[in-house]
Amino acid sequence: KLWNKQQEILESFENKFNKPDIIENNNNNYLSIYDAYILYCKYSNNNNKILTVSKKYFEKKIIKLIPNEFIWNNTILLTYWN
Image 1 (cartoon, rainbow, N blue to C red):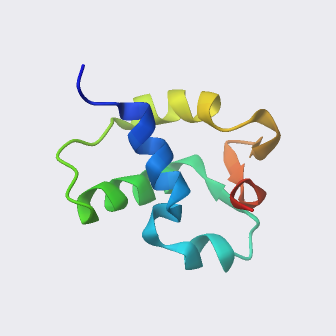
Image 2 (cartoon, one colour):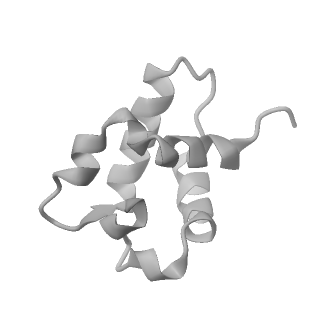
Image 3 (tube, rainbow, N blue to C red):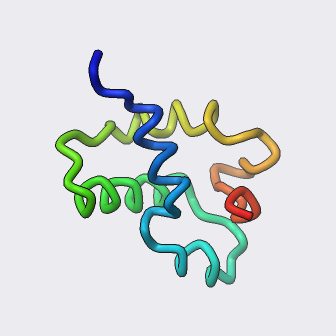
């Protein structure tokens, strides 16, 4: 109950996973939800987070956390971060 999973995911998004170049220099204009999860895990590890949400939880919550106009074909449009 003390761990706010949603907030931790949002924190990683707000900080662009500590890798703004991945977001800003991506030629595809999108990021797969799987790749977003991998970046979230690395973000958590690099920021000494004790716990990391499961992939299933991440995929379930990402649909609710990111507005629909930024989700397309199981990817996140990079315009979400602009």
